[in-house]
Length: 311
Image (tube, rainbow, N blue to C red):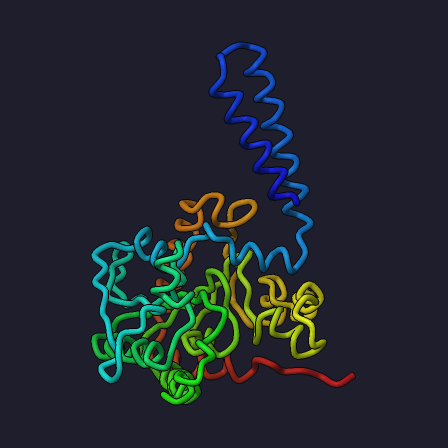
């Protein structure tokens, strides 16, 4: 509802600006702009967990290819798992971020009907995880840091994926990523659900955009299992504690990367700058750590996840 009101005011402001340029029109536009800022502050400071999920899925929210294009140069995409086929739900290749030569992999959803179908809405098949592993092994061979963007509702849940070893492919990535001797920087840019996310999410540091989500399951899936009713997604989103502040509190992530007011789609350039600054700052710290220390720290980091105490 708030998004609709904001869009209506924006349209009104545009109409006033395009109309006859007069002091009255200018004054009215200024009043609407003030009202717009107030409405944004109120609306975006009282978002429910489910509304935050909707922001993470906003159709105009930047995806992996957008970040790669805007934060790096000399990107050279690499394709295929050398076994079955190229999974377009994953994009990856060699790139340079300022002076940082690296390998970038990212789950890609697409931004229109054709590209969403091409990229399977960001849901990877087993060959996607094997492709990611092949590229990361190459990064290890050439001593390049790895940057991994997570943005998926989960691995693709189809019979063919299970026949080709979906669970094994994810498990193999978890094992191998834990052992890599190069720095691994994880950035959750949108949705990060289930094994589909964690299969590319074992790293030395995990940064999460403010309105991204990170959980074992989507709210709809959780509601279907617990209450046999997917319409109870609002309650599920609240119970899952999937927002960035909850993840930081429970030490599932290391940093929250702030977004523009209302989400990254409202000012993509600001989001790109924030993510780029985060990656470079973490790389400057991680490159000073020895490979053996990186592996031990990474192991300890994930071993303590999920700890609980009985009261």
